[in-house]
Length: 328
Image 1: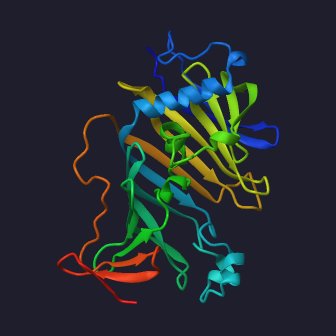
Image 2: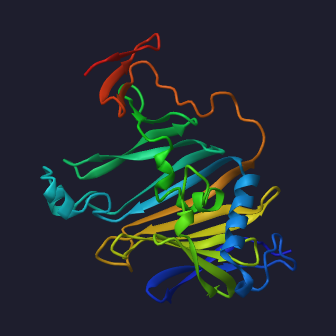
Image 3: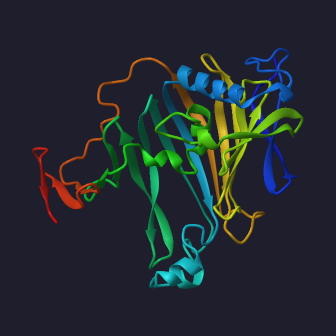
């Protein structure tokens, strides 16, 4: 049987949007059949497909490798640097001063509404107009949201006011969240109340799709494979294109098809033909179901960590015995 993975094919115009298309090599019989006639699909069918996938993947552990390419000025534009009165060359070149590509591993664990995310994040060095990577983790255990950046000797932690992991909204996670948690609270990747079926006649390189839109995200769902998302766009408040993404799939024992690769392009306000940032991910592990170790979602702050409590507006330091003292 031929490979079931989706593969990047080409750019093609869609009215008012730029759509990244994928090719799907179809097996003789669909692994994950949906309704054969896209015109028969309703919003209730879409919601039911989302909820079914969220139930099956109530517990999921993901690992993947990330490669991110930044164009010059992608992290901070010249205009932003001037507004912030950055010293050095940032006001002339933006940050980074020249294109740069970075790679690193990432992990995401979901169990119902609990989340843990481990990755790398950027440290901006304005004087040298460069960026570097530092370890970063965030978690939500059902009651407390935390984040931790850096490592010894100066790690920085935060206790967040929100009762959710706010990192689930970032571009690097959107392809995965649109598949694993499209409508479930507290993630709300899509606005369920605003979601509408806007086109039942879309074809992505020959694949029949139904298009849904919540006023912010436009999502293209494969009608022959249980409405799995193939491509999406995120728009700015002014209607301009911000993100354009695709998701590729491979067979999976539990889910039938699960994300294997994804790509997200981020655009500046000046152009929707030349992205300022391109994120590519390739999954190395997709584990669905099964028990998780105790404390999986409890992000620990090591002694010496400075922790800012957004709820009380206090800066704390973790002592060797695990207690915390206020430092300002």
